[in-house]
Length: 333
Image (tube, rainbow, N blue to C red; front, side, top):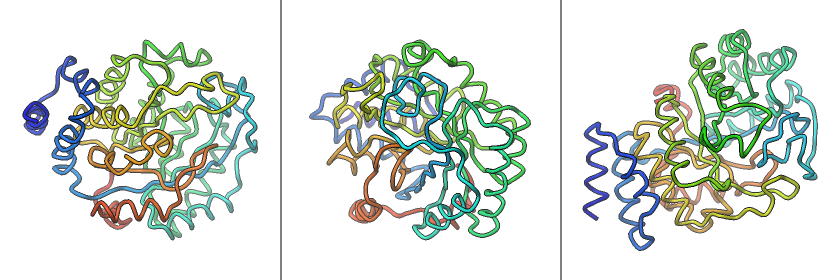
């Protein structure tokens, strides 16, 4: 117990953990997992107390993507039987925001497939965001792919608070996952979003045949990029993708990953994202002792947990949903 307690105190004293210490978190014996999560919670509690931020995804454009990402059912090389459609119109985007507001969701995420948005697609998102802001006052996160500076400026002016573009994996592992764009392309989009004034959101997908050192590198890269929000996805391998059948994860390891990201990025919003239901399974509640944010509802092409089950889980933990008002007051911590 002393090891994890002391490491957490070091972080709370504004210290950074060494690479060897980071690897030791991922190698924590399973029988010590509660001690590790307790230490993680001490860090989480300092910056977020017992509050949990809720996020909801609107799949604004599905399929039709020219990229060759090995994990994605929307990729041009995937043979997954998914629904494909072009950018949804303003009415549907606003209706999704209405549902998010009803569920007390703090951040509404508009996500579109593709390499990057056309100017026409940016127009559509801009018009919807203006109405959502005026009607519901939700915080908006856009995830539209590789972004140009002028597009970022327009999104910011329309009221988009946050822009998501995941690094997905480490720089050294990136070419094993996709070759149709580079790791630097992704970093550049995060930089463009930051320079526009939008809060940068960038995360990862765990379980894509990476090494443990890759996971540490992902966490440290996001610290360097100063991402305000870090969604951690656990691979839910989809039939028809290049990673079909890959199943390297177990609940204990997923908890260690969440702890690692909290230790390396102590002040940041860490969100348990896609794949939590199938990878953390019955240990989902323990993940929130490190993370302070979750997605509610479905993901892009896979189903999530029922919203009522998520709320029950938070209530049983004694955690509190951060209200929209509180999010407005705190902005993106």
